[in-house]
Length: 287
Image (cartoon, rainbow, N blue to C red; front, side):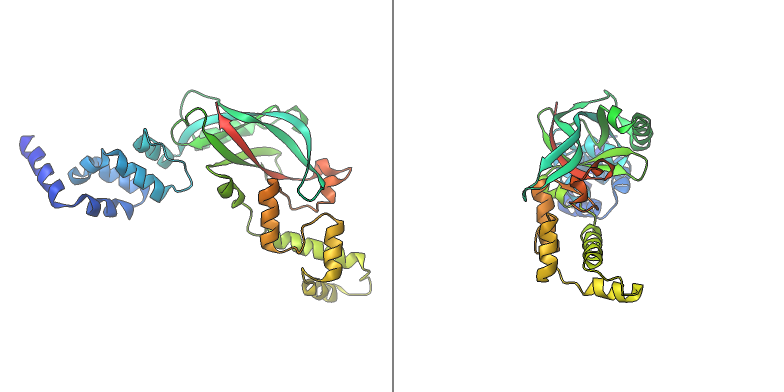
């Protein structure tokens, strides 16, 4: 044992710690943990907190870092295990006034505090099955939403952001958690802007009487409509949209108002607004 320990110390001195870390950095997380357990040169490096703080930032940049137990956090995230939290619904008919003065149907309004739902670690697949059961209630009877945050338990008082979205057509609501508002805003679906733009172009083209055009001509006309065309701009303004309707302007609108939808704003302020799907960004504190 003494000879092995002496060899390990020599090897660790010969192989610079930075060089060893660069080897870990090039591996996937499962291989990292395997090497930390099986290779004598890496076991010593893997006992240092700074190693896993750096690996967290490298391999899991979207997760907040647990500076107290970074190795445990890294291991749990790699194993897809974490802690279940819940957040209460305080209103199920919530509307808000956006930055352009539109009253918009949002649906659920959430408390600004989330609490630990279980005192034990839960795997991702087990959590998903649990959430399906919890979500199996009518919309207006739901009182809270649970969600899994991979890794170690988050310290009380930490502020996080969540994107609340309806999963498919199952009436199942989920929350994806981020460390910052910027990260949550960046979760916008890539096709959202272009899908909305094409829908608005089609609505506009039908309103200006294109009954005499066949489908191909109508499609060509729709694609020819510019977001800065004066008539199209007036049409958008009348429906409450930011103008000119560029991608950057729309993404700023989302960031400022903390919601998005594939539906027209006019439909989100109608008698049938409750039928619409709205995704929202919420801010909450861990209790």
